[in-house]
Image (cartoon, rainbow, N blue to C red; front, side):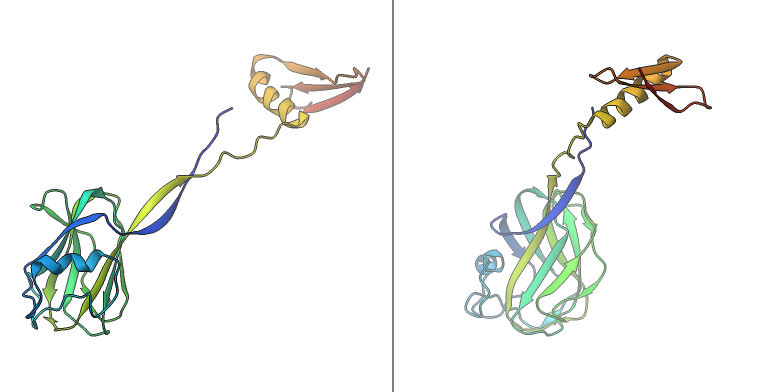
Length: 207
């Protein structure tokens, strides 16, 4: 008997899967590109942050490189206070050359934490937030989280081993081969006749 296994999807926030963070956004004094990994270390604090200068957001980006291609379906942006910081969209890439739009334009920083969800079934090695409009304000960036779907198969459904189910299954498999089928119980007191004759569906006889 074939078993049908249907997948369900759980979602997990991944830490430690990003191995590189780069940007062309000009950072405020005291902040350096070497500190960008603070955004993916799981620490939410003003003492573990990145702060940019105020600047136009268009064509500026914040890029995250993963150890291996990963499916991401949501990015959560965390900053010190809820303050508009430009319009951005999420993109994915396998080679840092060709980028695919994954989300529409989002007003970054309008809430905190801010969840940016999108449909994606492709594992990419790189994800980035690309500025498309507005002004990036000088506010502490705390943390960027990535949500990845984890596929877990459901256990197989329980098997019905009752005699009625067994008879029904055998009948369905064998009725096409014969005009009728006869089943007798182990006690030989009852007989079940199943016929292809449309006028006779089931017939129970006593021996």
